[in-house]
Image (cartoon, rainbow, N blue to C red; front, side, top):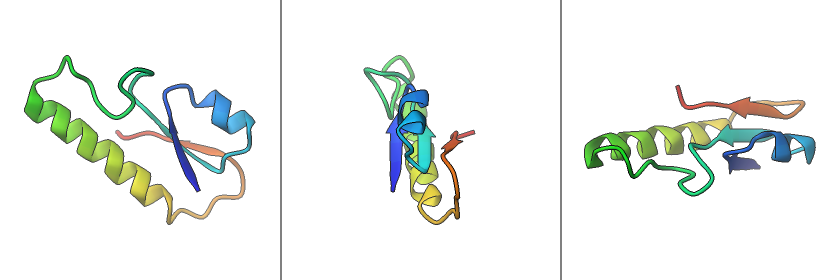
Amino acid sequence: MAFCSAIPTIPVSAGVPRVIHGRAVPYLLGDPSLPAEREYLLRERLTATALSTLTADVSEPIVFTAE
């Protein structure tokens, strides 16, 4: 299981094993202030990070970032 959150301390405190740090509360996987092409790349990077966390072996909650 993985969870995307703009406030990762909440799912971590709930024991979620894989947390992806989202962009912001109203735009979790995007940023409307960016030009369309850059926002698309941001969304693609966040989605790829989320999918890759599903194959990571974890023994305690970990926060992943899309850097």
